[in-house]
Length: 338
Image (cartoon, rainbow, N blue to C red; front, side, top):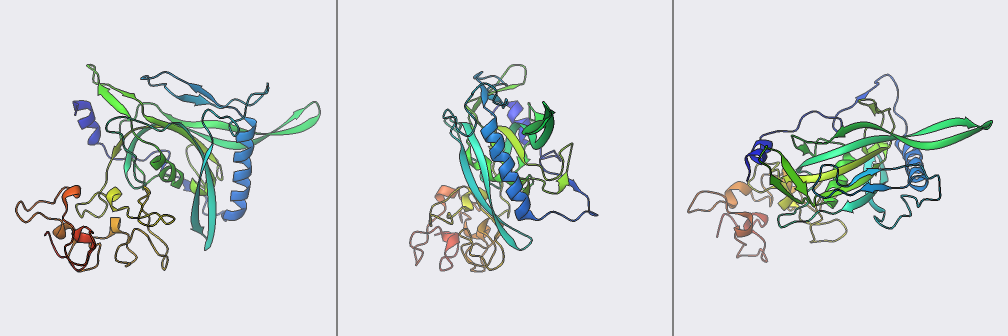
């Protein structure tokens, strides 16, 4: 590992545009459902009235930079272009005691690839450059007629990141979309800089309910849908409950595909079954120091009795009792290393 990257690992997440906002406590918040209806209409209008320009400069800082000009000469819209097919992710969130299912549109300019390529879990840290824009409605008078256009304005850009963003401390839209991408490759240069290549890169279009909603920050008006173009350079794994197992490895199952990890771990509402909660105590495994509820901590159960250190995850013994091949810390009938 080069010295520059060792230096980067020492940084912790700072307070940035994607993680903080201010709201006017004197003004009642709008209805979430009504605002989402407005947001998704404006997002889809933007996608249908603008086209995508992608700049290719492999190995350079500006590789896969994007812009979104207004269609003026029959160009193919972002929604209908085929080079980077539009994708969606549905996210259900309880807000004001109402379940709202949000649709996030996103584009994969490049998924990311390399011998050590990996995707972040939604609770990991990411090293990323990005550009943020907000979508708004503009009304102008043209030839005596009022014409309304959906536009975007840039509010933030980070080209050379020096610290990681914790996906638990940023807007929800980021933590939902980053796991869809992978890291690429990088090399250290004699001048101390790093050149990144084959990194994951994309664009996400986020309703305000998964962003700042009624808050405002750094020039972003309240209730603004956001556009982020992102480049994923590296992932830093996090062990949120300090049990010796990185949180991404405590992703047990997808809600829609039992037994298959999906890159996401969540805390659920009270009474809602969590597929990533082994013992059903309403603490997901990534926040539970005793994953199987046997009153033996996970940290103690994965410890090698010879070295006194935790086994590497792949080497944690499976339970020889009733565990059906489960690792020992996931079965209450099996205590400690075999």
